[in-house]
Length: 463
Image (cartoon, rainbow, N blue to C red):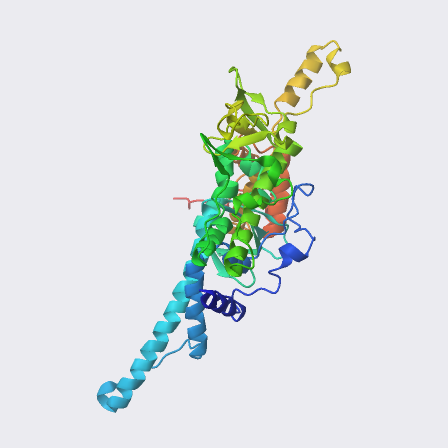
């Protein structure tokens, strides 16, 4: 088993397509990717496509492709094949054609395995298990989010350079793709807000492709799958305070020692470390107040915000089955009575409330003019980063399809954009997306003011 594991490692080092000199960037560099929006809470630089495939693909599928690729390279990495006439040349042609068919089959297995790896990454991006950011249209463009739905019409055309291309007439490309786990993405808050706690937990931890791949590696070396949380009847609970440093306790990975079975120990430890890092990032959003969890208290009634301090208390536990918050009694007689009944149920992740108006303003006498002013402020739309980036991508496609003629007025495009993103795109953000799209696509005619000119029509000849 150890020999097989070492063979896989050797195959990876000798494989140029997926080997990246910067694969250790996440551990050795503190430099942030320019696309990071929440700089104060996100230091993850993102993976290039080659590294994302290596980290998140099924290990068995990856190992099969390594073997097929090595066999193809050993056979000369041939791409062209010549068949001879067996009727004319006889037995020599028969043996030659057999060798050619074997070489072609080796090439086909390598190509098919390579396509499957790229397809598995696309499926994870389309299902929002991973998030991609890239530079649309030009390597010098500003990084923007690639919507999950866009991967239905995108294909990865260059793994080494991390480039994707649209399956359309324009064949527009997205350069410098960076792949992120959900909780480490630049727009992580927008992706989690509005979901239940259980949904966010599945997106961020349980359904994370890298964690799934690491768990499979643990099984392949004879280890035990890394369970998340602790069975504490009647709950399956997790202790948020344990993840303050992004690690997991020894109880979560068993008591296997490194000098007993080194390979198994290292695989289990690696999986536990990534699980802890993902969950710690999610908990940091809650404890820092970047996301607010609202739940129904034990006494019933309307949902209220869960205090931030509750996520840092050593007595707080979370029931992983339904996301309820429970408390541990340190003075309980035994473990069967240590955990309380839920103190908050039905947790939903929401955006933090805007700060209230100063007390001085509240004491002022409100005239009709000031009332209208406050009403306008209350009705203001808060733009989401994902909506603005999606609007820019939409405008870039329209401008690329018609670079020399704008089919209708800018105001009409704004009305259409407002119907697409009614509660998450302000007009100022639309104007900024419009200017960025003009710069990216090079369709300067779209920046001209006024309505577009109607095409001239020839008058019918007089009878």
